[in-house]
Structure formats: structure tokens, C-alpha cells
Length: 410
Image (cartoon, rainbow, N blue to C red; front, side, top):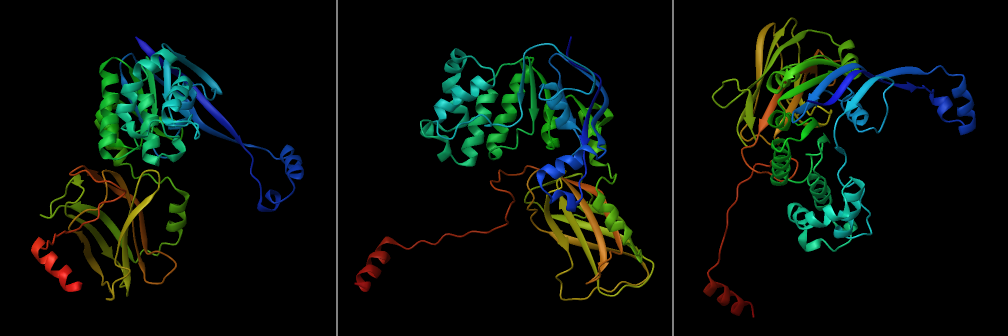
């Protein structure tokens, strides 16, 4: 039985462009000028068709701007399609932004009733599940405190806990697992897995490819508002990770200035034994190796590798820029290796940009965008945004010595 059906659905937005001079004018003048400005059509989704069977978990992945969130908004009736037909069979709940219905002056308990009602739960249903919601969120000690005094972690945990206790026929999820610490994220995944096993139809949109692979049997890969791949989760995710298609205007800006005395051939990630690995773990050794060809000699060259997430957020850089030694390259083939004894990146999939340039030069010699991907998995529970390698030691003073020192100080 089909629970969700997209039949040749398209969504168009009209975009009007303003010059800096026009944008700075009085709003009435801007409105008048807008009447004479021809708008540009932007198709966020174009001619998309797919079905989701009852009890199936479908993942939707793609770069920012690919159309993922637009599809979710169309399914949840936040916006309507420009063309095409959408069919929904069953009670649908959309979990888009946890805690979005909270009132800061109300207590956690009061907000459970308020937010639960917004999400479509009856008061009697909320009362029945109240203790379970509080326990899941881990905020029992503060449940009768106004949520404006909650930490951000407590806030989102309570919001997710309420939503996690919905019992819809169809559940739409958009990046909701980016809440709390690693242990709470695991609890969220386990809860969604329970709903899946109970026969709930799930549509899951996320940049967390590990979570998508764990939850979904089938995945759609979107690109510029269209489906470019539809198949088993592992196959589609692998294709997405290996997609080196340029998707940023800034890439073209970099490439226009290339001089090509040196060309980067490959970027590889190796373990401490020098073997290529598809997956690394937080806190373990890693080697990043760049292989290159030198066509003309270059003095004072600088190599850099930038690692960033699929939404474009930069996380770290490996570079020779701050070395006191000058790196001179002679004609021929070569390689350079960056080593770290303990990888500080948290679990996730990271993309890379690699470039070589002469120190202080404005133009790059060669630039590669998304030359490869780095997948990092759990090896330990880490709280925060990155793992900081560290040692520790403890010192103790015997109690008799402490007393003796105190007497001496007197």
C-alpha cells in the first residue's frame, strides 16, 4: 500500500534582483521599481516523482539547495506545488524544528501540553505519556521551571521528547537528530527505530549519512531540484560521497586564477600503517597524502587541505603555510603527507578542498574542490564540537602531611 505519492511535482519561486543603489532607496520607490522588474524563475523542485510504501523508511540526501527541505514542506502542506499531484494516505506528523512551539515564560510541564497540542496530540494522550516524555528528555529536576531558564541542550531534548511520543502513520523528519550529546542522539535514533519497527512510514532528510544509512532502506539523491539517483541506501550514499561535481560559484572564482605550474593528482587518507582506509575513528591516527606533478619549478610553495561538512561549514585545515621552512618544488612527481596522531573530528562525513599556491600570491597554482571525502565514525563518546587530544595525571598529598603544612603556615 502506498502512503505517500509524488507525481511530477514542481515548485517554482519568483526572484526579483535589486542593485545596491535600488536596495538603499525608500521602500515605496523600491516597490514601484519592482513592478517594472522582470522576475527570475527559480525551480526549487522540478518534475519529481516517487512513492513511499507503508512501513518504509525513505531517506532524502543532497547538497544545500538541492530541494530536500522544499519536498518536506510540500509533504507537510507548509507550501503548495506549482505543478503536479501529492497524495497522502494516513495521519501525518512533521518534525521540522524541535521546540518551535515553546513559550519561554511557561514551565517545561506546561510547554509539554502546549507543544503536544500544536503537534496534534489530544490532552488525554499527552497526560498519559507525560511521565515518559519527562523521563526521555532527562529534565525531571527542572520540569516545573520556566523553559527560558533551560540550557539549549535541555530545550531541544524536551522538544524532541514530545515529538518522539507522537504515534502518526507517517513521520517526516528534517535534521532533527542534531540535538543533544552523542548519548541522547543514540536515544533519538533508537526511538525512531522503534517507530519504524511498529510500521510507521518515515521520510528522513539529513546530512548525517550514518543515521540515514542506519534508518533507511531506500534513499533519494537530489541535485538542483531533481532526483539523480534512487536506490538502496548504501549504494546511493556511496555515490553521493564520491560526487566531486562542483556546486559552488566560489570554485569557479578560484579556478579562474589557476596557473598550473603544479597539478594535484590525488588526495588520499591513510592509517598509521600507510594503508588507505574508507573509514576513520575519532581519536585515531590519520595521514592525509597529496600526490602532485610539478611542470615548472616553484619557490616557497604552500599546500593546504580544508575539511568541511556538506552544508559548507569549515572544521579544520591542514597546511604548510605556518612552517618556518621554505618549500621549493622541482620538476617531476612528488607527494606531501600531513600526519595527526589523534584525529579531532567528530563522527560525520567531511568533504575536502585542496590547493597549492606560492606564499603571498593572490592566485592559486592548482585548486581541487571535493577531491575526496573523509568518513569519521564513533570510537568513543565525545561531548562538544571536537575531540581535543590530552593526557592527565593526579597528585595526592597524604593527610598527615596536609595537617603538618597547615600547622607550619599558622
